[in-house]
Length: 227
Image 1 (tube, rainbow, N blue to C red):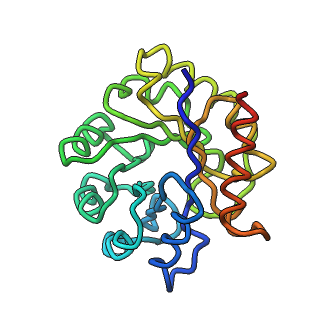
Image 2 (image 1 turned 180 degrees about the vertical axis):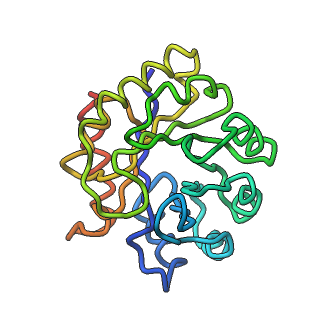
């Protein structure tokens, strides 16, 4: 049975001077959870959200938070982000010397562990850690910047990961997320390939009819693609 579609905003395009108001507005628009793009200036070029910033926004909404850890030291940082209110931490297979240990550490700290794959990383890189995660993220852009164009050639990889999850026996337990360039013209391809958690940033904020319309429109397009 297909996992429910979830529309999840990245807060990168939000107004950082009023993040409390921004996350409250996203919740009111009907998002399923909120993703924080955590960047360390090393694994990716930019610097973004520290745990104190996320903690200050946590009180302004009730939807779950997840942190997309685009960092080289997730083990060092994990506890702070879980304590800040992120129930799920997504780490990159490319950044972890001992991926199995890192995912296990997140779970032991009380978080939900998840793993991300950059566009050039094969799906096989995560084959032996699926017992430790509740979500796999297939990147459809190279991480580090918002507003990039969707890499449609990742759709066969999304389908490959979907098949891998189903064959693992945990297909009903593990979410399949896609992040990068998701908008009205690309969400159908990602959903049809097997993704059920769709991250949108720029597309949500540039909808002239507002956040609520953007969320409902993306959700409808995803559902239509898998109907």
